[in-house]
Image (tube, rainbow, N blue to C red; front, side):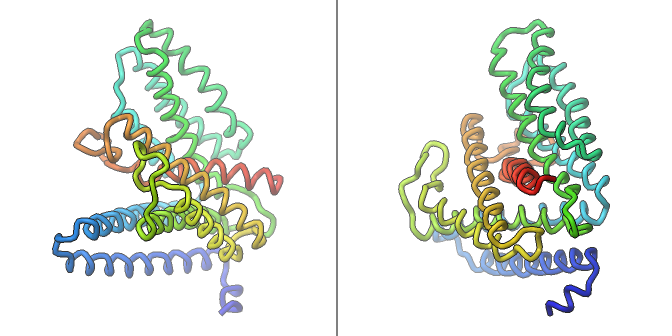
Length: 326
C-alpha cells in the first residue's frame, strides 16, 4: 500500500485523500440519518446530541467542499474563493451588530479596501505584510475614518466591533489559502495536505471535547459563556487532536514530534477561539450566527462553521513559518 501511494503524483495523492474524506462523510451522514429516523423524540438529550452531530457533519461537508474546490481550482482561484468566504463571514458578523450612519465609510473601507488588499498580499506571497497590514495599519486607519465621519456616539464600541470583525473574518480566514503558498522543500504540490491536517486536527479536538463532556460532565468553567466548556474535557480534546496530528505526520512536511506540537498549537488556538466566539454571541443575545432571521447574508451560520479555523489558521501558519524559517 505504501509503495502504491509513493508511486502516485502529488496531485493524485491529494485527489485520493479527498475521495477517502468524502467517502467517510457519506458513511457518517447515512449513519446520522438512520439514527435520526429511529429517534422518537422522547429523550431530549439524545435528540440534542443528534442535532449537534448533524450540525457537525454539515460543517464538515461545507468545509471539505470548499477545500476541494480550492485545491481543484489552483492557488489563485483558491485565494479568491476564501476571499468570498471572508466577505460573507464579515457581513454576517456586522449584520448582528448595531451600526450607525457614521460607520458607513469604515464599512466601505473594510469590505472594499481592506479585504481585497489582504488577500492580494496573500496571492503575491507578501507574508510579512500579511502579518502586519490589518493588526497595525488597519487598526489605526479604521478609527481615523470613523472620526472624520463626525459621529462620536459610542465611538469606542463601534470601532472595536468592526476591528474585531476584520481580525476574525478577514485576517483569520486569509491564512488558510496562505498555507497553500508556503514553499516547503521537497513538498511541492502537496500543500493541500497541510490545510487538511489543520482542519482535521482542530475538528477532531473539538469533537472529542464535546463527547468527553457528554460522557463525563463537569461543572462548566465559564457557564455564562458555554455550558459545555470545562478544563478536563478541553484537555482530553486537545490531547487527542495532538495525538491524531502525530499519526498524520506522513501527510505533512513535519516529523512526528513536530506534527504533535503543531497539532497541539492548532487545537489550543481553535478551541479557545471557538469559546471567544461563543462569548461574542452571548453578548449579541444569539445562539448561532445568522440565527433568528437576523442574517441577510445569504450564508446563515457561515461564521459558526469557520470560527475555530479563524483563530487556528493564523497561529498555525505563523508557527509553521517561524519554526521552519519559510
